[in-house]
Image (cartoon, rainbow, N blue to C red):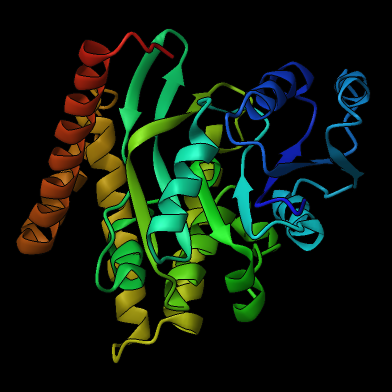
Length: 312
Protein backbone atom coordinates (compact mmCIF):
# COMPACT_ATOMS: atom_id res chain seq x y z
CA UNK A 1 0.00 0.00 0.00
CA UNK A 2 1.26 3.47 -0.91
CA UNK A 3 2.36 5.43 2.17
CA UNK A 4 0.26 8.42 3.14
CA UNK A 5 3.15 10.16 4.94
CA UNK A 6 6.82 10.29 3.97
CA UNK A 7 8.80 11.13 7.10
CA UNK A 8 12.10 12.81 6.20
CA UNK A 9 14.82 12.59 8.86
CA UNK A 10 18.14 14.35 8.13
CA UNK A 11 20.94 13.37 10.51
CA UNK A 12 24.62 13.89 11.25
CA UNK A 13 26.59 12.31 14.10
CA UNK A 14 23.54 11.96 16.35
CA UNK A 15 23.30 8.18 16.57
CA UNK A 16 21.74 7.91 20.04
CA UNK A 17 19.33 10.76 19.35
CA UNK A 18 18.48 9.22 15.98
CA UNK A 19 17.56 5.99 17.80
CA UNK A 20 15.04 7.87 19.95
CA UNK A 21 13.72 9.63 16.85
CA UNK A 22 13.21 6.43 14.82
CA UNK A 23 11.56 4.67 17.77
CA UNK A 24 9.06 7.53 18.09
CA UNK A 25 8.09 7.09 14.42
CA UNK A 26 7.84 3.31 14.59
CA UNK A 27 5.59 3.59 17.66
CA UNK A 28 3.02 5.67 15.74
CA UNK A 29 -0.57 4.45 16.02
CA UNK A 30 -1.08 5.39 12.34
CA UNK A 31 0.96 2.99 10.18
CA UNK A 32 0.72 4.25 6.59
CA UNK A 33 4.10 5.94 6.44
CA UNK A 34 7.62 5.50 5.14
CA UNK A 35 10.76 6.66 6.93
CA UNK A 36 13.49 8.31 4.85
CA UNK A 37 16.77 8.85 6.71
CA UNK A 38 19.33 11.07 4.97
CA UNK A 39 22.72 10.74 6.66
CA UNK A 40 25.39 13.40 6.15
CA UNK A 41 28.25 10.88 6.17
CA UNK A 42 28.21 10.40 9.95
CA UNK A 43 31.29 9.00 11.72
CA UNK A 44 29.64 7.94 15.01
CA UNK A 45 27.37 4.95 15.74
CA UNK A 46 24.75 6.04 13.16
CA UNK A 47 25.76 3.13 10.91
CA UNK A 48 24.87 0.60 13.63
CA UNK A 49 21.52 2.30 14.27
CA UNK A 50 20.67 2.25 10.57
CA UNK A 51 21.69 -1.40 10.28
CA UNK A 52 19.34 -2.31 13.13
CA UNK A 53 16.36 -0.76 11.33
CA UNK A 54 17.40 -1.27 7.69
CA UNK A 55 14.20 -3.19 6.82
CA UNK A 56 11.99 -0.41 8.18
CA UNK A 57 13.61 2.66 6.66
CA UNK A 58 14.77 4.06 3.34
CA UNK A 59 18.39 5.14 3.77
CA UNK A 60 20.54 7.51 1.74
CA UNK A 61 24.05 8.76 2.51
CA UNK A 62 25.31 12.10 1.18
CA UNK A 63 27.86 14.82 1.89
CA UNK A 64 25.85 17.99 2.34
CA UNK A 65 28.81 20.12 3.56
CA UNK A 66 26.83 21.44 6.51
CA UNK A 67 23.81 22.42 4.43
CA UNK A 68 20.88 20.48 5.87
CA UNK A 69 18.64 21.82 3.08
CA UNK A 70 20.38 19.40 0.68
CA UNK A 71 19.41 16.45 2.86
CA UNK A 72 15.79 17.54 3.17
CA UNK A 73 15.55 18.21 -0.58
CA UNK A 74 16.85 14.73 -1.38
CA UNK A 75 14.20 13.34 0.96
CA UNK A 76 11.46 15.33 -0.79
CA UNK A 77 12.58 13.97 -4.19
CA UNK A 78 12.55 10.37 -2.92
CA UNK A 79 9.23 10.69 -1.04
CA UNK A 80 6.33 8.59 -2.36
CA UNK A 81 3.76 9.65 0.23
CA UNK A 82 0.86 12.03 -0.37
CA UNK A 83 2.17 14.20 2.45
CA UNK A 84 5.76 14.98 3.46
CA UNK A 85 6.49 15.22 7.20
CA UNK A 86 9.74 16.58 8.58
CA UNK A 87 11.44 15.37 11.74
CA UNK A 88 14.97 16.33 12.78
CA UNK A 89 16.98 13.44 14.22
CA UNK A 90 17.33 15.11 17.64
CA UNK A 91 13.54 15.52 17.99
CA UNK A 92 10.70 13.03 18.52
CA UNK A 93 6.94 12.62 18.15
CA UNK A 94 4.07 11.67 20.43
CA UNK A 95 2.44 8.31 19.59
CA UNK A 96 -0.69 9.78 17.96
CA UNK A 97 1.05 12.54 15.98
CA UNK A 98 0.40 11.03 12.53
CA UNK A 99 -3.06 9.70 13.44
CA UNK A 100 -4.30 13.13 14.56
CA UNK A 101 -2.62 14.83 11.60
CA UNK A 102 -4.29 12.34 9.21
CA UNK A 103 -7.72 12.98 10.75
CA UNK A 104 -7.30 16.74 10.34
CA UNK A 105 -6.22 16.31 6.70
CA UNK A 106 -9.25 14.14 5.88
CA UNK A 107 -11.73 16.54 7.51
CA UNK A 108 -10.31 19.86 6.28
CA UNK A 109 -8.85 21.51 3.19
CA UNK A 110 -5.29 22.84 3.52
CA UNK A 111 -1.75 22.41 2.17
CA UNK A 112 0.39 22.74 5.31
CA UNK A 113 -0.30 21.56 8.85
CA UNK A 114 1.70 22.31 12.01
CA UNK A 115 1.14 21.21 15.62
CA UNK A 116 2.26 22.56 18.99
CA UNK A 117 5.38 21.03 20.56
CA UNK A 118 6.96 20.36 23.91
CA UNK A 119 10.14 22.45 24.06
CA UNK A 120 12.67 20.66 26.24
CA UNK A 121 15.95 22.10 27.48
CA UNK A 122 17.66 20.02 30.15
CA UNK A 123 15.12 19.54 32.95
CA UNK A 124 12.99 22.47 31.81
CA UNK A 125 10.01 21.94 29.53
CA UNK A 126 7.07 23.93 28.24
CA UNK A 127 4.56 23.91 25.40
CA UNK A 128 5.28 26.16 22.45
CA UNK A 129 2.35 27.02 20.19
CA UNK A 130 2.64 27.92 16.50
CA UNK A 131 0.54 30.05 14.20
CA UNK A 132 -2.02 31.47 14.15
CA UNK A 133 -2.93 31.61 10.48
CA UNK A 134 -3.34 35.11 9.04
CA UNK A 135 -5.01 36.51 5.93
CA UNK A 136 -1.57 37.50 4.61
CA UNK A 137 0.66 35.10 6.51
CA UNK A 138 3.61 35.78 4.19
CA UNK A 139 3.79 39.47 5.06
CA UNK A 140 3.08 38.75 8.73
CA UNK A 141 5.99 36.28 8.97
CA UNK A 142 8.35 38.74 7.29
CA UNK A 143 7.44 41.54 9.68
CA UNK A 144 6.98 39.56 12.90
CA UNK A 145 8.88 36.30 12.53
CA UNK A 146 8.41 32.60 11.84
CA UNK A 147 5.28 30.88 13.19
CA UNK A 148 6.21 27.31 12.24
CA UNK A 149 8.50 24.47 13.29
CA UNK A 150 10.05 21.98 10.88
CA UNK A 151 9.70 18.92 13.14
CA UNK A 152 6.04 19.81 13.74
CA UNK A 153 5.07 20.32 10.09
CA UNK A 154 3.69 18.29 7.19
CA UNK A 155 3.18 19.54 3.63
CA UNK A 156 1.12 18.15 0.77
CA UNK A 157 3.59 16.62 -1.73
CA UNK A 158 1.52 17.75 -4.73
CA UNK A 159 1.65 21.36 -3.50
CA UNK A 160 5.46 21.21 -3.27
CA UNK A 161 5.68 19.64 -6.74
CA UNK A 162 3.20 21.99 -8.42
CA UNK A 163 4.76 25.12 -6.90
CA UNK A 164 8.34 23.80 -7.27
CA UNK A 165 9.18 24.52 -3.65
CA UNK A 166 12.34 23.15 -2.04
CA UNK A 167 14.61 24.25 0.81
CA UNK A 168 17.07 26.93 -0.28
CA UNK A 169 20.62 25.50 -0.28
CA UNK A 170 22.39 28.86 0.09
CA UNK A 171 25.13 28.85 2.76
CA UNK A 172 23.90 32.21 4.04
CA UNK A 173 20.55 30.60 4.95
CA UNK A 174 21.95 27.73 7.06
CA UNK A 175 19.91 27.33 10.32
CA UNK A 176 17.19 29.62 8.87
CA UNK A 177 16.43 27.60 5.73
CA UNK A 178 13.20 26.42 7.39
CA UNK A 179 12.06 30.03 7.83
CA UNK A 180 12.68 30.65 4.12
CA UNK A 181 10.83 27.41 3.27
CA UNK A 182 7.73 28.43 5.23
CA UNK A 183 7.85 31.92 3.73
CA UNK A 184 7.85 30.33 0.26
CA UNK A 185 4.87 28.16 1.17
CA UNK A 186 2.99 31.29 2.31
CA UNK A 187 4.04 33.37 -0.72
CA UNK A 188 2.65 30.64 -3.03
CA UNK A 189 -0.74 31.00 -1.31
CA UNK A 190 -0.53 27.76 0.65
CA UNK A 191 -3.41 27.16 3.05
CA UNK A 192 -2.15 26.64 6.63
CA UNK A 193 -3.75 24.70 9.47
CA UNK A 194 -2.54 24.69 13.09
CA UNK A 195 -3.22 22.00 15.71
CA UNK A 196 -3.41 23.63 19.13
CA UNK A 197 -2.02 20.65 21.04
CA UNK A 198 1.54 19.32 21.54
CA UNK A 199 2.27 16.29 19.35
CA UNK A 200 6.05 16.37 19.39
CA UNK A 201 9.19 17.02 21.43
CA UNK A 202 11.69 19.64 20.31
CA UNK A 203 14.97 19.27 22.20
CA UNK A 204 17.49 22.07 22.69
CA UNK A 205 21.11 21.13 23.33
CA UNK A 206 24.60 22.50 22.71
CA UNK A 207 24.93 20.68 19.39
CA UNK A 208 21.67 22.07 17.99
CA UNK A 209 22.22 23.78 14.63
CA UNK A 210 20.63 26.98 15.94
CA UNK A 211 22.72 27.01 19.14
CA UNK A 212 25.16 29.52 17.59
CA UNK A 213 23.03 32.62 18.16
CA UNK A 214 25.04 35.07 16.06
CA UNK A 215 25.20 32.75 13.06
CA UNK A 216 21.49 32.00 13.39
CA UNK A 217 20.57 35.69 13.62
CA UNK A 218 22.72 36.51 10.57
CA UNK A 219 20.95 33.76 8.63
CA UNK A 220 17.52 35.12 9.55
CA UNK A 221 18.52 38.60 8.38
CA UNK A 222 19.81 37.10 5.12
CA UNK A 223 16.41 35.46 4.59
CA UNK A 224 14.61 38.73 5.34
CA UNK A 225 16.80 40.61 2.89
CA UNK A 226 16.30 38.02 0.14
CA UNK A 227 12.52 38.06 0.45
CA UNK A 228 12.29 41.84 0.84
CA UNK A 229 14.33 42.53 -2.30
CA UNK A 230 13.56 39.52 -4.52
CA UNK A 231 10.29 37.88 -3.53
CA UNK A 232 7.94 40.21 -1.69
CA UNK A 233 4.88 41.20 -3.73
CA UNK A 234 3.78 44.30 -1.84
CA UNK A 235 3.68 47.77 -3.30
CA UNK A 236 6.38 48.99 -0.90
CA UNK A 237 9.86 50.46 -0.97
CA UNK A 238 11.96 47.28 -0.83
CA UNK A 239 14.89 48.74 1.10
CA UNK A 240 12.61 50.48 3.59
CA UNK A 241 10.57 47.30 4.07
CA UNK A 242 13.71 45.21 4.66
CA UNK A 243 15.04 47.68 7.24
CA UNK A 244 11.66 47.61 9.00
CA UNK A 245 11.64 43.79 9.08
CA UNK A 246 15.25 43.69 10.34
CA UNK A 247 14.48 46.30 12.99
CA UNK A 248 11.46 44.29 14.16
CA UNK A 249 13.53 41.09 14.34
CA UNK A 250 16.31 42.69 16.40
CA UNK A 251 13.79 44.38 18.68
CA UNK A 252 11.98 41.08 19.23
CA UNK A 253 15.27 39.29 19.89
CA UNK A 254 16.37 41.87 22.46
CA UNK A 255 12.93 41.83 24.05
CA UNK A 256 12.90 38.02 24.40
CA UNK A 257 16.32 38.08 26.08
CA UNK A 258 15.09 40.79 28.43
CA UNK A 259 11.84 38.95 29.23
CA UNK A 260 13.83 35.77 29.89
CA UNK A 261 16.10 37.78 32.22
CA UNK A 262 19.20 36.96 30.22
CA UNK A 263 20.23 40.53 29.53
CA UNK A 264 18.38 42.69 32.07
CA UNK A 265 21.43 44.82 32.79
CA UNK A 266 22.85 44.58 29.28
CA UNK A 267 23.21 47.68 27.11
CA UNK A 268 20.56 46.23 24.75
CA UNK A 269 17.86 47.49 27.11
CA UNK A 270 18.73 50.93 25.75
CA UNK A 271 18.13 49.62 22.22
CA UNK A 272 14.67 48.44 23.28
CA UNK A 273 13.64 51.88 24.52
CA UNK A 274 15.14 53.60 21.47
CA UNK A 275 13.19 51.32 19.13
CA UNK A 276 9.94 51.97 21.02
CA UNK A 277 10.56 55.72 20.90
CA UNK A 278 11.16 55.64 17.11
CA UNK A 279 8.10 53.57 16.25
CA UNK A 280 5.86 53.09 19.30
CA UNK A 281 2.80 51.62 17.54
CA UNK A 282 4.73 48.90 15.69
CA UNK A 283 6.97 48.01 18.63
CA UNK A 284 4.11 47.89 21.13
CA UNK A 285 2.32 45.52 18.74
CA UNK A 286 5.37 43.22 18.80
CA UNK A 287 5.43 43.44 22.61
CA UNK A 288 1.75 42.50 22.68
CA UNK A 289 2.39 39.48 20.41
CA UNK A 290 5.18 38.23 22.70
CA UNK A 291 3.19 38.72 25.91
CA UNK A 292 0.16 36.98 24.39
CA UNK A 293 2.32 34.09 23.15
CA UNK A 294 4.01 33.72 26.54
CA UNK A 295 0.65 33.69 28.31
CA UNK A 296 -0.85 31.15 25.88
CA UNK A 297 2.19 28.84 26.16
CA UNK A 298 2.14 29.01 29.98
CA UNK A 299 -1.61 28.38 30.08
CA UNK A 300 -1.41 25.40 27.71
CA UNK A 301 1.50 23.87 29.63
CA UNK A 302 -0.35 24.13 32.93
CA UNK A 303 -3.62 22.85 31.43
CA UNK A 304 -2.02 19.75 29.87
CA UNK A 305 -0.08 18.91 33.03
CA UNK A 306 -3.17 19.25 35.22
CA UNK A 307 -5.64 17.47 32.95
CA UNK A 308 -3.51 14.49 31.94
CA UNK A 309 -0.87 12.15 33.23
CA UNK A 310 1.21 12.82 30.14
CA UNK A 311 4.68 14.17 30.82
CA UNK A 312 7.53 14.72 28.32
